[in-house]
Length: 405
Ligand code: CTP
Figure 1: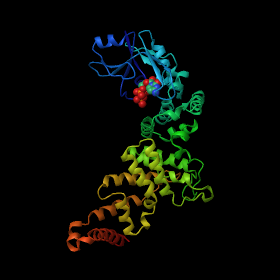
Figure 2 (figure 1 turned 30 degrees about the vertical axis):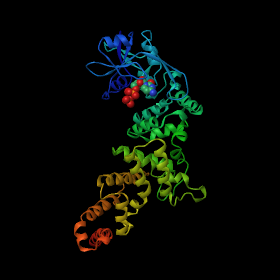
Figure 3 (figure 1 turned 90 degrees about the horizontal axis):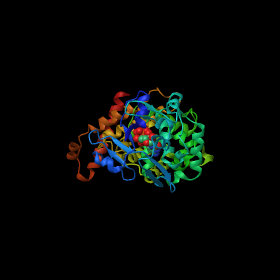
Figure 4 (figure 1 turned 180 degrees about the vertical axis):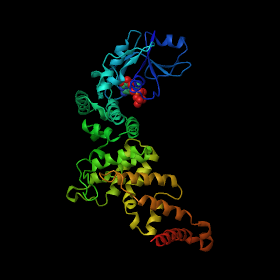
């Protein structure tokens, strides 16, 4: 029995990156032998074991053969006769198909190291096509390794898989899992551009795909194209290391622009309400968690008001705070502002332009929070408390504005 470190750990070590988890492949053993020497079986679908001390994963070398459509349609074949090369061959990318033996020698039958140096994401073999999740993985790796290119033959293969209907079978949870991981990478725009290039975006996130080719007014949007704008917004969010909810809100804030009738272009009056509806549908479809969904809805609905904040009447500002639940959840309100900030800066020439609306709304919130609702309640009849508190908050903001000129 021989064990090898494989996959991401070998890749990341060669790239000089910190290694998170180490996966191992075991050649020449049966499940029974693994259990006899103390490994704990954990795999439901695959023969995978945990090392009794290190708790690292050890999988028996295996081949997989496609037996049906989509993600679940596999037959796994593991036996002591399966070689390391056979196991590496069924993996997704050459850069993920390298192994290191126990003496530290690199085993690289599919030239992963060469591709790593040339910065190429290339599939190992036609077995790639057996798992449609790999389309999302390639897109995600493109977002992580932003200076890597996808080999033309791999892009071709992915296109063929999309045309064959493979991505239609992906389970929603898996789609969100990969998309959310890709959103957290260094250059999330690349994930969406790669998915678009192979045709998968249209199937998985048609609402996002539709934004490409939709113009916006050049006076506010020098980039013109809505899809491009959203990509800039996302990458700006990633540069600031903003959270997943902020990045998801950045991705979806303008979905409504894809639904504007062409004769109204480049204007998008009322796109906010349409965005809200589309965010809801998309979130439902791919099971987006509530924190991401709710922030995205708030940002879709109210980003226009944040951009206009300095012109809003103080009562309208308090209404905005109430809609976004800023009094009860000030931290979430900060996330909301961050997403709007990304929207502002995600335009050519706006990257380092000041956006005073953020500071203004934060100060206005602090003043409104400073109103002592208990005190106000003592002064008015019980039926009018809500209204009086609202009034006192609006007045606090108005008085400050007057003082500041
Ligand atoms: N793998 C694959 N096809 C998949 C999933 C995984 O071929 N659909 C293989 C790849 O060889 C990969 C390894 O299994 O390197 C481990 O998978 P995983 O831990 O998901 O990915 P990593 O490459 O380690 O990437 P990350 O750094 O994102 O964890």
